[in-house]
Length: 90
Image (tube, rainbow, N blue to C red):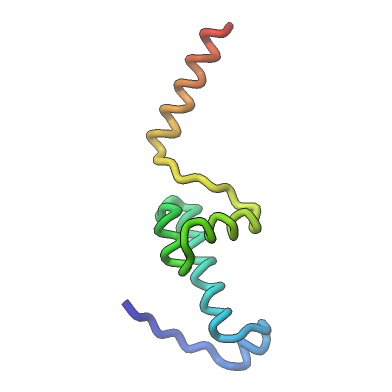
């Protein structure tokens, strides 16, 4: 799919970015938002942002963003297992 967006030159001058850098930043920020909302996996977010998975992880670390790629069911199972283990230790 190709998407065309018109961005006035004076806007790019205001944000002090070249067109290519602005587009890359927009894609990264949108991928990050979708990743935060669990709409995209880490791999798909990397693909949308135009990065490989490792590069996206490094960028997320620079943004102090949590890095996870677990399905909610797996997280719930891990929490339940941890709670059961703690109960056994008491």
